[in-house]
Length: 276
Image (tube, rainbow, N blue to C red; front, side):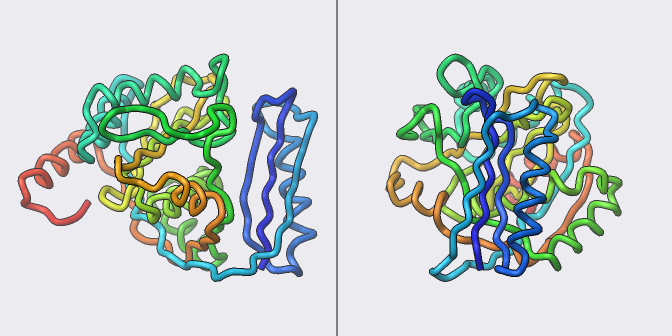
């Protein structure tokens, strides 16, 4: 198996990126697919496209996707409220949750730009601990199996999200890998101009898709990985960036209202439900 990674930039500004794990026989067609994606992205035309091919020599870990819940937020204010509730459910202080949302929307890289990778934040102090604030930490070497992808597509069609299937598949793949690596929670806001959706994800809460988390027609976005104070940062970054993971099972998908989600969190805090 081979890891294929694409990154497209325009004068060092991040335009697009993608990750695949493929067999040798599929390399040529997937390289073309990634190149086509790079030159047709809504965030602009790149002047640099880098595609890296690397043989995977170690073991690949196979894990199921996180359960997916799409919350029917109606506006930006409601989306921020739900995101804050989801983050504080992980014992992340409310002021740190608000700070994280603002930081992503302002741009985590120097000069207020979107980062190439993720910020890493201590969930108790709110301090950023990633070594490089320009590059961040890039989750790589991951993919979803064809069978799991087809199952996910079918599940998304049942909740009227088939038009979003490619984007959701990529986000869910990344979030599922990151959640399996001692990450307390992840928050992400899309940097695509036309995509106003974000998510919060963890093993505790699953993958929460949150529309309207970003104002429309804004190309600044990003993600933050919340980690415990006791984390071995060097080992954590190595696993996020280098551990090969394939999602081999699509799990449940559903749509709920903001009120239903709030009630679920309340019941969970009171110990009357065991899962999201």
